[in-house]
Length: 283
Image (cartoon, rainbow, N blue to C red; front, top):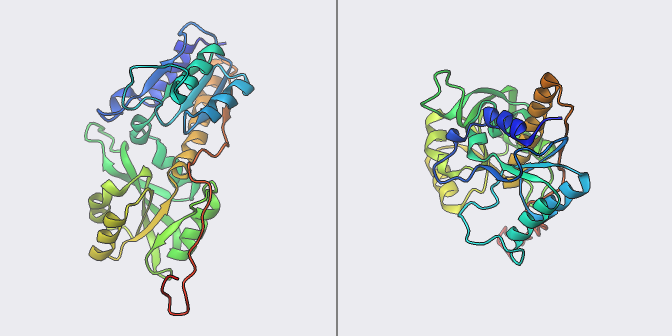
């Protein structure tokens, strides 16, 4: 049975902290380096529901994509919801480790997992890491389809392959347009529009697209847009990460039991579609 420090060293090799953005908060939040680890849980969000799941599972390590304290804090009092998470994890001897933008930039990383979930062939990073001599690390991925699909068919594939959320998949563009190349970026992606346009792809699948950047992108080019829920675009990474740790465990004879949370922690819980009148205008 490995110690926490050994497992963390393996995770840091997969997602080096120096790949993270300067504003990010990655690494180990709590945990005793000398504690034994036999069970690990991967999840997107370090929220109370996930902490409770880790307790029920009997995990000694929770690995999440999103940081618990991104902006820093002056208190971990249990009267705050984040403080309660810390208290519950520590009381139950559960460590918390975060791999955020370092997992986004890694090879393979968050966008590789997203592409894999959609059966897209990764060609190269959308925004390459200039420090990577092999040209495989970076933000987002440029992908190709095995055979062309219409935009409507690609959207249907995304809706079926990604975890179900209240939002579903929002689409901008001609449903009959032919799609051969796709840029993907797990999580919020509208800061990458310049890179997507420069890549010359047919479609961009990401999350959290805002009105003005999306509108301007559509006015400039025929680029099709697919906007999924933030959580749904990043959840496939949990399965990829769990498989990576499983392989490391087998290689080292650790015997870890590695789990992926299927709890939906997307904050949106319902979707009510508006009904246009006979002219197509909103009622």
